[in-house]
Image (cartoon, rainbow, N blue to C red; front, side):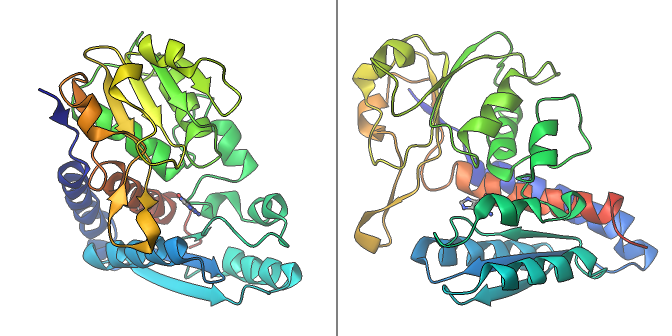
Amino acid sequence: MTKLLNGNQVAMKIRKEISNEIVKKIVNKKQRVPHLGIILVGENHSSRIYVNSKIQECKKIGMQSTLIHLHKNIEEKKILEIINNMNNNPMIDGFIIQLPIEKHLNQEKIISSINPKKDVDGFHPENFGKISLKNTKSFFPATALGIITLLERNNINIHGKHTVIIGRSRIVGLPTSLLMSRKATFGNSTVTIAHSYTKDLSFYTKHADIIIIAVGIPNFLKGKMIKKGVILVDVGINNIHNSKKLLGDIDFDSVNGIASYISPVPGGVGPMTRVMLLKNTLHAALHYRIK
Ligand code: GUN
C-alpha cells in the first residue's frame, strides 16, 4: 500500500513550533511580531490564490502581513522604488515578490534589488548561492525547504539514495537539487535533474529511489515509469479549467500500490511551502531585525 506524506499534518506541527518561538523569543520580550511584506503585480488568478493563502497563514500564527498589489502595467522604476522602501522600512522583517511577474519587468534585476537579509523567498543570487554551501543562516527557498522537511519529518532516509528531480526551475527544481545533494546531516542524495530536453525520461525515473516532480502537467508521471517502492513528491498544482479541483503532476491512481510513499495534491507540498515562508520570516525577525 502506498502511504501518504501528509503535508497538512507536518505543517500544523511546524506552525505550532513557530508560534511557540514567536511567543518565547519575541512577544514575551515585548517586541513586535514578525512582519511579512508581499508584492503582487497584476491579476494572475493562481498568484492571487497563493498570496491570499500566505496572508491567511500569517494570521493563523499571529504574524503581521502587508500586501502591496500593483497594476499589471506598473513601470519597473516604480517597483524598484517600492522595494527600496521595503528594504529600508524597519517595520518589515522580510518580503517577497510573487512570481511570475509581468513580461515587461526584468525579474533578475528586481530580485537582485531586494536586501538579501529580507529576502525570505531565498531567491536573491547571494542567498541562492549559499544554498550549495554549508550555510544554515541564509534563507532557503520555501518549496525546496518544505520538500526536504516533509521527507525528514517522515523519517525518510535520503542519504546515498538516487533522487530524480523533474523540472529545473528557480522556485523548485534547482534549489531542491542543491539541498538534497548537500553534504549535510539531511542530504547526501545522488541527484539527477531531468527537464524538457531529457531523452528517455523513463530510464531515469525507473532507476530512482525518490522522484520529485514539478512540471505543471497534470498526471504526467505514470505507474509504468517508476519502480516498486519509490518515494514520490508531487509539486504540481494544476488548476483544471480554473475550477476548484487541483491535480498534481502524478497520476495518483496508476502509481498507487507501486510507490511506497506519495505526497498528495492538495495537502502535500503546498502547506509545507507556506509554513516554510513563515519560518524564513521568523528567521529574519530573530536575526536581521534593524534594532
Ligand atoms: N510563485 C510560485 N511559488 C512561489 C514562491 O515560492 N515564491 C514566490 N515569490 N512566487 C512564487
